[in-house]
Image 1 (cartoon, rainbow, N blue to C red):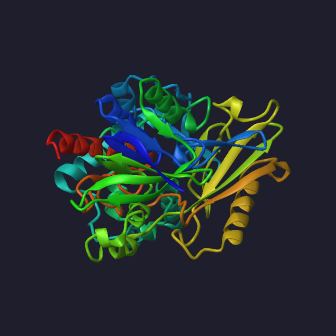
Image 2 (cartoon, rainbow, N blue to C red):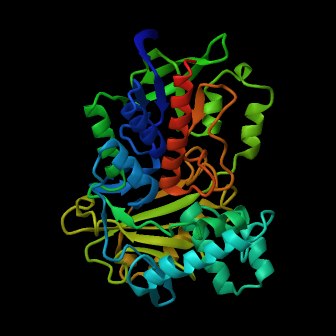
Length: 435
C-alpha cells in the first residue's frame, strides 16, 4: 500500500552515517527544512554501536577524530564533543616495542618534525613523493624495502583504508600520511562510536530537524524536468509513503543510490560505469571480552609486523558502560587477502584469532562476542581512498556524500564530514539560485 505524504522538504538526506548526519545538521543549521531517513534502528552507519549479549559493539569505526573537520562541524552547529582524548591515544607495536604516535616525545617528533618536514619538502619540491601511476605495492618494490617494512605498510593500509598495498595509490598513501596538520588526536565517547553522531542528531531533532529511523528508501522519483521530486519510503510494517523534496543528498553510496532511480533517468552507461569502478575494501573485526584486563592492550594499538592483524583496541577502557560490570571489551581487526573480494572468510578469521592469541595473554580463555565481516553490501569502505566517486551526479539536484564520495585525501569519518561540507555548499548554492 502506498500513501501520498503532505510533507515537502527542501532536502531529504538518505542514510544517517557520518556523512548523512553531518549534511543534515549543517543544512538544518542553515535554515533548510530537512528530513534524515535511516533504515537501521539507530544512526551512525559504520560509526554506530549496537547491543550484543549485554555489550556495546561498535559497527566499524573505533575512534573519533577530535580535530579537523569533525571539530569544525560540531563547533558550527553548536554541539559539544563529549568524546575525550586518552593519555596515550595510539601506539604502534613493532615486536615487543610500543611507539607512541600521538603523545610523548615520539608523538611530538612524528607530528611536529617528521610529517611537516617530509610533507613540506614533497609539496614544495616533489621530493620523496611517488608518481601517480604507482600502486603502493609497486612503490615498495621500487624502493627495495625489507619484509618487515612491507608488513608495516600493509597493516597501515589495512587500518586506515581497509585495503592492501596493491589496492592503494602510492601517492594517495604518501600524501595522506604527510598532509598538513599531521594526524588529529583520537578520542572515545562514553557511549561508543555512536555517541558523537547521536549527540549531533539529538541536537538536530531538538531544534526542529526531522528524522525517520527503521525506514528504507525504496525509490527516488525523477520528474519530467529531469530533477528529483520525491522519494518512496517504506517503514518496518511495509507501508510505503511518498514524500516530496527539492533536493536529495544520499549517504548510501553511489552504486546503491544509482539503483534507487529508474535506469532510464540516467545517461546511457552511467550505472554500468559505477559498477565498473566499484572497488570496496573489507574489514574483519573480532569482538571479545575477558574477566581480567589484558596487560599489554591498554589503548588503540596498530601492529607493524603481523601478517593480518592490523589493529586492536581496549574498547571498554575509555568507555566502561560498553561492557557489563566485571568484564572488559576488546576488538581486533584485519583486512583479508585479497581485500576487495574472493577471500576465504573462515581462513581469514582463523588467522586473525591465531595472531590475537599469540599477541595477548589470556585470549584463549576470552569470550568471543561476535565476528563482523564488513564486505559486499556492507563493506569496510565503499571506496578505497583515491577511488571515490564525485559528489555530483548527472541529476542536478542529487548529490552523494560520505564513504564512497569523499574528497581527495579524505579518509575515515573526517573524510565523510569533509564531503558533507562540500555537498552542503553545493546544495545551498542550488537553492539560492532558485532552481
